[in-house]
Image: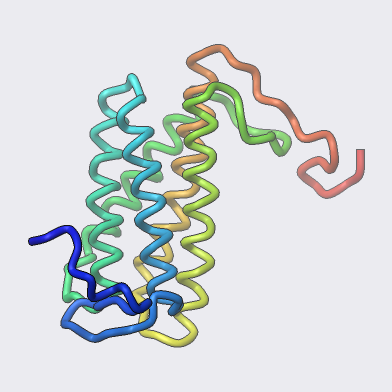
Length: 183
């Protein structure tokens, strides 16, 4: 398959099945953001030292491709997303036990790798918002939204765990505490 086809030179792209749409359509926006998220997850996987998390990140990359192809109209099977959500929840709990429970909001950052994970987390939140908007017009399986919501939580905890393991203190946001009172 050639890298360039010249069929997108006029601002159109093909969905699964050959349907042509404008590149600025909501659906194309969603899977463009999924691609961006997948690239960041790949960067993180290439840098993370914990092999178990690295392997899990590779699984997430597979899932993100599956989600994108499903949204584009392919009949890809997504029931495995529910199992992956359950696995993310277990991993979140384990990481929270290691890094400690939060009592305040924290600023994204810390080590360079943790900062990369926070970028991926915020992109994941954008993908989730875009997918919610798409769901108002198109049929989107709720498993996809659940997956994206949990993935951002998982990435948040990966960033926290990285900082914890590198002995980098989290910076607490000084504005409002968890119950919404001004400090």
